[in-house]
Amino acid sequence: MSSDPSLQHNTTTSHTTAGASGLRRFAAAVVLAGITAGVTGWACAHLLHTVEHFVWSISEGHLVTALETVPWWRRFLTLAAAGVIGAVSWVLLHRTGPGPVSTEQAVAGRRMPVLRTIWHAATQIIIIAMGASLGREVAPREAGAALSGWISDRFGLNEEDRRILVACGAGAGLAAVYGIPLSGIFFALEALLATFSKRSLASALAVSGIAVFVSTGWARPEVYYRMPELVSSPALVAWAVLCGPAIGLAGALFGEAVKRAEQKRPTTTRLLWVMPLGFAVVGAVSIWVPWVLGNGHPVTQTVTNQVAEVGPQALGLITLLLLAKAVTTLITVRAGAWGGTLNPGIALGAALGGLTGLVWSLIWPGSNLVACVFIGAAAFLGASIKAPLTGFALVLELTHSGATVLVPTALAIAGATAAASWWRNRGKKHDENNDDEETGPVALTTGPVEKVN
Image (tube, rainbow, N blue to C red; front, side, top):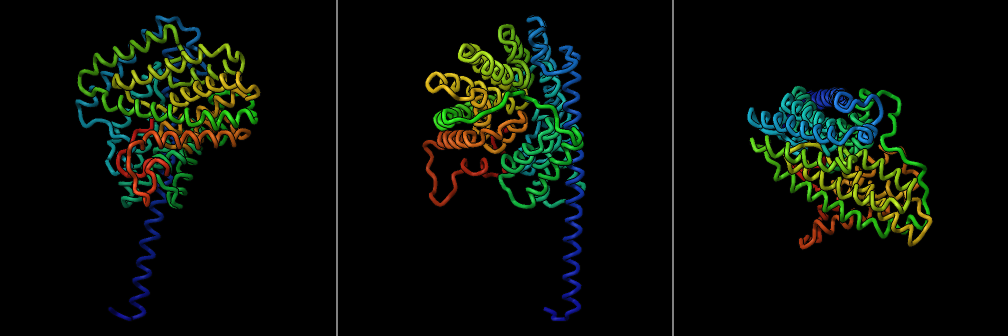
């Protein structure tokens, strides 16, 4: 080995230059990924509103307003039509090439065809706008991940940086469609990367921040779920400690049911009759329970209003909403549809929190019942997707509430996470020297994990 100082200086300079070049390329890719995710989120939101306006005659507000005035036969026929549109689109997608690549698979290194992913995402948005009982968040996540992967390949990023950027692009797509940057950041880090390294954190902050700025501008978006003031109390803290584990267990069960339904969804020409039939069943349910249609907003907002304004007399309606929304969401997935379960999960958690809160108020009066709705939504969602921080951030940002009930929320989420972890790991033997795979930030794997919709 040469000891010539000039050669050592040249080698050091070469390595520094290469490192600086790689950092500049990664930084440029981060900025471009944020911009494309923002455009993707904006496009998905506007496509959704355009279809809703055309189908439901919504000029402003949310689907819940239209559902209360549209006749039952129109709800039924619209759902049946959505089933036909989705079935034809996905059959063509499967018969003309490879099927959809999930975000988790993309983070693990599998390439997502950009145009086919956009086709897949647009189909999701259209059927959800027509009333499918799923969330709209998977579409911008998948499109954001696909575009970020394409950008990574164009910039020649290494596999680890590519993995980071794909995850951040997916989180930013979620952030952009709702205007919720914190949720996009936590989703990328907790649910996809399972790491909070400095490089990943900085990238997630930048990509989600840029995406939300591009999608919604600097103004804070309108609140998605309207809630009255939340107030903490000893009764609320006691409810959170006692009911948090039960809500978490319910969330884990729902997550497992969704996974089983996803694994059994048809992808062949069976879709042409299975999906329209499944959607027709959901449409039939909507004749009597119209709030089950859409991503879950109608259920969550109705539960919030009923708990705040009606009280214990609303127990029957809230129970009906809980069961109907769970069943229709699982039927929709099992029938072959793709879409998110984040907002359906929020709806189920809100209903379960409202139910248990109303019952608890008969035992120990004094709880702020709407706070039970908020806490139930966060605890259930975090347990169902195995990402408690993401679940909390989503509910926090979508309601613009929660700062006044942080202690009971934290206690409920802790109990929910512990109960969900116990349920998933029951009967398993773990090495004492290894971390519980469910007590860290989600499942600590880099391969495909349970879909977070």
